[in-house]
Length: 492
Image 1 (tube, helix red, strand yellow):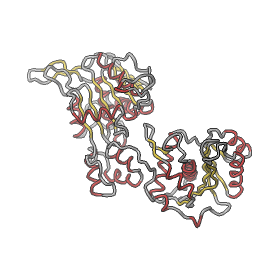
Image 2 (tube, one colour):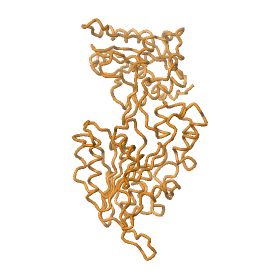
Image 3 (cartoon, helix red, strand yellow):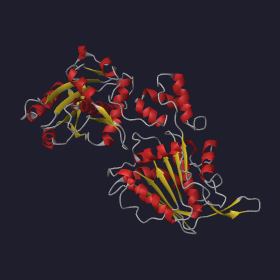
């Protein structure tokens, strides 16, 4: 690897590939042999926090498996193994999505393309082929039916905590379109090839009943002699993140790359911008579930400024809108276009539990938006279009700056919730003290899956409404987007 590859990421892009001590140690162990020359381990599980370079190492191993002498072809007179190239190597680089698989596959391609081996491989968008001797390295996603019948010699399973079981079958008997089933298919496929093996790389997840969770628990027990389990984590599960000394020790214990290429200061700085469960998972590699409460106790109440409930007429603001028709509630929340925005309730329509015929006053909601636009300079109105397409079309036809903001899509909600959380916990916004908004904020719980954390109701049919909280997240997101585009965003 060091003789033939170059770095694919960061400041070392294109420079000769060099391994650090903890990386060499893992590779040496992963390639241990039995006395008969066969591989000791059929599976290697390498768990580390984010930022420790496991993707690039996995890419380098994949390149070596494609073109290098990775198979023992006997021993020399001094008892040292003689390396030989695999016959027709078949190497799927697999992840929960094509986008995630592209990260590792792209690194593997860059390490070859920018290095001394560029003339020996044909590199395409979805596969890498040696020009001589056969073989193939390619990316795959965890989608049912796309990986049956393969005979891999080496499998990389990237961020396995995202390979969610959606079939609900017990005992690992995954079926149908279940992502976890794809791993099972790939893993079983390598049994068809001599000395084949797999590498699982991941950070900790949130569900120990998952595919990776089961591997983690089995690995901690150490009962499988064919599995190499190396998991870097902070051993103190109850470390207080407010204790500088304790959290520094925990970070150093969990992150072997600190002192090599990962900054301790940068990791510690993330405490101010991440929720506790995110920091523990991403930087301490600990298994954590979502907290029952979204925001830390007292943080929202501290930001109340009831004396300035609403901004002056004519102020530049944005609106966030989220609602339903019959079953829940609807809310409109405004936010000022300031570096430290002020968040305030414009309207809320909540179902009366005793009124079985209750429906949202659609015309009243539309008129509230018109009235807000007449009172303030509303720059943008973000609306979840679900069941409100007609109202959005009416308002757009009237010339109001309405845009679709689909709150049901994690691609929108995950970053927006993270930004809102950060602004609240670092006191970079104020709010009007409206008890309805405070109640909806308190009702919000965190959902975590492979797409990231975001707020949701405690269960689908819950009467604990969160529409004003979602509207507030939308409004705050529009503030950041508008001020960023104007190059005026300066966190206070």
